[in-house]
Length: 200
Image (cartoon, rainbow, N blue to C red; front, side, top):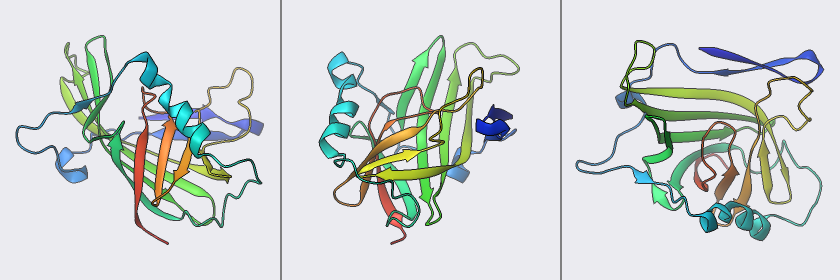
């Protein structure tokens, strides 16, 4: 399924998911035998943590660095709110979404490609909503860096009456780690910690 998103100046962007779900065995190794997905804390105090992290770790202004910064490489999600994957990111109305894997690839030219592997469970299965399926969401967008703040997505304001995808945003932490605290495609405000696995 392809969802077209109207961008600025009449351009369009697409967020794609495959017509046929990606098999879990092809995308990510599941939890160990007997393991269970970690649930995200929902306490009100914890919901403020992403903003506190951004304030504590972000730089003090500076110019947009964007392409040419030393961020190029492949980054893999390690933890969600400090817990290892899999993690339930959204639940309600008989639906449950579990994040199994998340990979972010940043290029020197300012392109950010992201692949998220999600398990969808439905308590009331229907022909178009199976009881249990696993799929991958793939999207490529530009990125920019200001100080220690990373923004992935279009920076221009969304035009009136346009259906625009929001941005992912986070901070560059010590130890070659990215902490994303704002998410366009996940139903959560959790802190996602990515570690670099390749690149310089």
